[in-house]
Image (cartoon, rainbow, N blue to C red; front, side, top):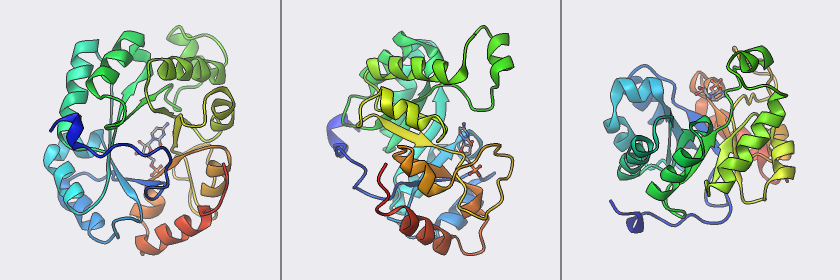
Amino acid sequence: MNAGDLPAIRSSHADGSRIIVALDFADAARALAFVDRIEPGSCRMKIGKELFTAAGPRVVAEVRKRGFDVFLDLKFHDIPSTVANACSAAMQLGVWMVNVHALGGREMLSAARRAVPPGTVRLIAVTLLTSLGRDDLTEVGLDGDPQGVVERLARMVKDCGLDGVVCSAREAPGLRRALARDFCLVTPGVRPAGTAPDEQKRVVTPREAIANGADYLVIGRPITQAADPGSVLQQINDDIAGVVG
Ligand code: C5P
């Protein structure tokens, strides 16, 4: 598939749901049994390392066939040519969004952008994994306040022409102030009020995340493990409709 065959990115997120459901399942059968219960248009789907390693490109095709946009969350981090080729391969799968790791550096980010031209697949970057605390950062030689490191990396990501970053909803207000409104912020760690945090340490509600400036919310278990996932999705979509970020 050529870049020209893909739909152009519209300037806002008005083109569909702002919820991205994390399909963290061990195999395609379980993932698709869940997807078959969900109405296309009520969310997009994220396929990460676990499901993609187990089930490969076919599961991406199956989810797309059912009418869902797919965010391929493989956080590419390698030498520039390898990442560029991996991004091209992701584009061939017809995914809606793909990501790389900002710590791969400027040259790698720019190579990824050249492989996935603006206006085709949304290309975003992970700045720092939220599982890393200040001591972990110091140990790997990244001194300084994590929020400052995240902002510095996010500026580099934007400078290389990428469409946005994955960040925690708590980092979103600072990034929103520092970067333009059209820079896309995708936030995990979201929990509807009253649901279990699982192992997420600092959670925010969907409304808080949107009010903090998030464009898209990544939500997994509160939806995938729900008895009636469709109604949980409906509630969250209703809850965030009209919230201004
Ligand atoms: O089930 P839950 O809502 O916690 O799933 C969150 C999803 O977001 C998982 O796929 C997880 O890998 C991903 N994620 C995260 N925290 C980050 C980056 C990604 O929870 N900092």
